[in-house]
Each structure stands twice: as structure tokens, then as C-alpha cells.
Image (cartoon, rainbow over all chains, first blue to last red; front, top):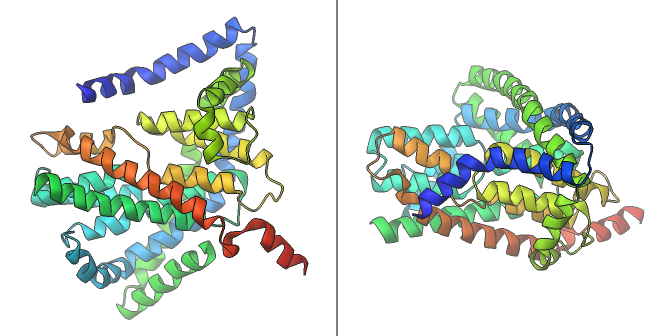
Length: 178
Length: 204
């Protein structure tokens, strides 16, 4: 029931928003076409503004991933994660998640193929993937768009949130499905 | 912090590559990912323009302000530095709504819009404010009700019940969002991250 409602919202939300905002604006006597184009102008500027930040972030993450350093980190951390009930197979995805959304989804799909989506490993990977975000990407894009270079406590706070999300995912999966 | 982590990725990556005789992989990764970054940024332009255009209409019609007002008590707690009727409040609410309903394409442009509004209130343009860090942390904790892409991947992989992960995912995402809020509110008091103190040190 809940899923059905949410799916319906997801399907109709964007068409409804695109309908309601200009319609409401028109009723409130906004020059809707002119306002839209005025706002849309910023789209290109913002896209270009993000480039240096995203290049810096993705190149560093790419080097870290493809060099084999990622695998070293996984083998270093796995004794600890075994203790809290996280299977070693899921760990690479957990570490990948804040770094690269595409990378994490790739690992998740790989786990689905190897162990099946309804295995404990498949379920844990799904819940982890759904409950955390690509922190480094979000940081580069959001701060890049306004030219923030000194990010203060945003990154540590984001990583703490990811960590808590991952740990909760492990516990909830073991509790419900194991 | 970000300087050290960024340098760490590169230094550790290259040392690992050299140790394992994998130098070519570093070259490929560096060049490939630089390309991907530009593709992603430029790829944002169209959707970005669409949402920023709609947002401008919503602003001029007073809709954004009304949204901000509707959630005043929560917003005042989360973003005490932002004046109550500032357009940033409405933009933040719209971004969060898009995230909650899994509208990823709309969430990013709306989030950037909210950041721009917060930047208007910022006195040091290159340094993040408390409100910006709070907003970012909440965003990275992924406040989502339906992890629609994960459900889709599970269905594609032949799961008997692709949606069974929704309940547990909500539990985990609520935990991470609460952790994000607690973390920013505590971390922003630390001298290392404190904006005003840092300014004073630089003056001395």
C-alpha cells in the first residue's frame, strides 16, 4: 500500500509540479515565460562553475579506485567489519558508496549476480545503497556551484552520517532477514 | 580536512599503483575521470535550466516563501542563521521534498538553488556557513522514502520481492539523517571548524 502510494507520487510529481508552478504564477500575475527564461539563464553558468570542483574530486577518487588502493583499504578494514556482522563481500560497496554512486551501484549489481538480490548479502547491499549518499560528489557539486573552497565541518559531518547509515543498515538487515 | 583527504586519495593511490606496478591505471583513471567530470557538469545544464526557470516563477509568485513558512519551526531549528522569510528556506524545503520523494533529477538543481540563496547571506564567500554545512550534511544522509533506483536494480536482477528493502532503508536513512544533524550541530562548535575564531586568528 505504502509502496503503491509512493510510486504514484514519484510518477505524477514532476508533471504536476511543472503544471502547478506556472499556473499559480499566472494567477498571481507573474510574467511566467519571462520569469522562466530569466531563471533558466543561470543553468549554464552553474554547470560550468561546477567543472573544476568535480574534476578535482573525481580525478582523485578515480586514482584511488583504479590504483588498487581501494582493495588495500578493504583488506585492512575487513577484520573490524566482520565483528559487527558485515560480510566481507559487502565491504567494498560500503567504502565505495560515499565516493562514487555509479561505482557503488556497479558493485551492488555484481553482488546481485553472484549471490542473488534476495540473499543476505544482496539485501544488505540494497539497504546500504538506498540509505546513504555519494557524499564527495554532493559536496563538490553543491559547494562548487557557489565557489565555496573552505568546506569546514561539512565533510566530517557527511561522513559520520554515511557511517551511521551503513552501520544501521548492517544491524537492521541482520535483525530482519538473518 | 578536505585538503588532506583530497591529497590522501592521490598520494595513497599513486603509491599503491607504483608498489603494484599499476602506473598505467593511474594515468587512465586521471584522464578518464577528468572527462567524466566535465560530462556530468555539462549534463546538468539542461535540467538545471528547467528547474531554475520553474523556481524563478515559484519565487515571484510567492510560492517558495509560503513553503518555507509552512515548515517554520523545523527550519528555524536547523538553520537558525537564516532569516525566517528568506527565499533560502523555501528552496531548502523544495530540495528536501524532492529528495524524500526520490526525484533525484529535480533534487540537485533545487539543492544548488538553495546553496545560492545561502551564499547570499554569507559574508566570507569562499567559506561555508553553518547553515550550508547543515544543509549539505542532511543532503548527504539521503533523506529518501523510496530508494527507487535500488528497487529497480533489484527487480532487474530477478528479486522475488524487490520492494522489501524499503522499510529497512527508511530506518537506516532516518538514523543517518539524525546522525547528520547531531554531527553538524556539535562539530560547528569545535574551534577547528569555527568561522569567527578562525577569522580572529588570521587577523593576529
